[in-house]
Structures are given as structure tokens and as C-alpha cells.
Image (cartoon, rainbow, N blue to C red; front, top):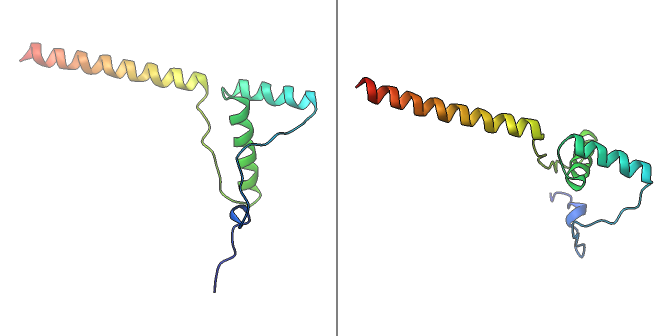
Length: 98
């Protein structure tokens, strides 16, 4: 028994991944504001929102990883720097104590 073909991969269909979409200016502004708030490009934010909507609706699992918010990226970098400094200090203390 053959499985049903994926409609997105049907014979003769080619999807470029590009989509021209017209929307009300107010909606565009709101989407842009939310993407800025989340630290993502408008395109990344919309793709992520559409992917989440598909998953929530039981559709294909085409999740796209969302970039980390700017504040979280900075916190992770600072954390890595603090750990690196602690490692250097620990090595110096071990060498001096030897």
C-alpha cells in the first residue's frame, strides 16, 4: 500500500520559496513592530509564525528556528566571557600554587 504523495512535492510543482503578498499597512506595521521586538527580521518572523500556525493546526512540521532575542544573545556572550576569565584565573592559580 503506497503512502499518499506530499501535495507540496507533487509532480510538476516547483515552489521557489518566494511569495509576494499584499496586506494592509496597519498589519504590516504591527508585524514589523513584533519582529523588531523579537529581534528578528520581518521575513524570519513571518516564516516562523506561519510555521507555528501549521504545526498548531496539525499540518506539516516545517518549523524554522527563530533567532535568539538580542538581550539573550548578549547575556550568553557575557556568560561565555566570564567563564573564560574564570578558567584563565583558575589555571594561573594552579600554576602559581604548583
